[in-house]
Image (tube, rainbow, N blue to C red; front, side, top):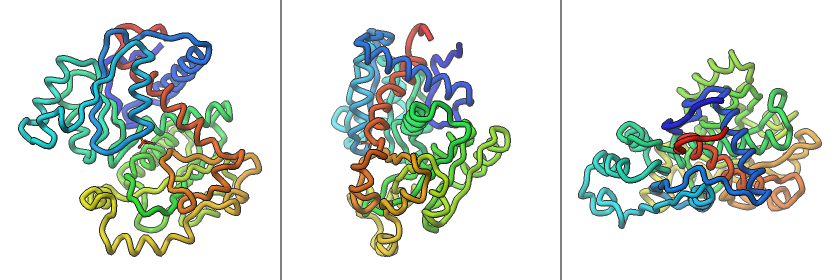
Length: 335
Ligand code: CP
């Protein structure tokens, strides 16, 4: 039994292979309990503070529902409730320290990485990264859990993590977290993306070092064919660098005009169609963290086919985040 009490979850790199497998295993146990109608009140009387600086459907709902199923309560701290928000009347660190005196954990979706890291530094309670421009660990945990459920073992699988075109500019966090997840768990990962959309190189190099120990094979390729050939899973996502993500936020997700024009040239090449899926293994499955820009990133034909496991993936956000909250925030855990 591993003890994760009081730990933050900012990066996949915060955890060892054994800890990652443990979190996923607890997520699977909590899922089984829930399916049998049994609630596990491990967070009775505890509170999770939720600070989300960008919109969220899956992450916010799964955290709120999850903490409630564990007997706890979530406080939605939007900008109207924080002096640090629109009013800018309080120091961020003071806000975080005060929240630490009332609550038992913080789920934080940040538009900047520095604030994510400083929240973890100044909080006396666990901070869970609910997506940042650099990492989205909760989604990477849910994706790994989903693949494990489907295959039983990740040792000999190949994942094609492929870029798809969309006009919006989502952050590259999931891409970086997936690179680290592959390196820690030891599966093969081919990231396919156009030039200019590579994952964070510092994270990629670190992952390469871990891969030497775990046996993972991690590569960046420039075509769907190279990534998808022999793949067991095709995980589609659209991402931009933290700099372009920030520009997108300044212009209500429209981004830099010159960048958007350049990106538009990728439209026809970078959409996952049935033809792309047919290059993978016969029983390959298609994933996407959602929200999806349908028929630009990936076609309806693919998303609506039996190969698509996008809703299993979305569901597992709930179970694995319950595991993260229970293991880091509960007074005692029976796992
Ligand atoms: N996948 C994901 O994080 O979805 P939301 O942005 O809706 O939370």
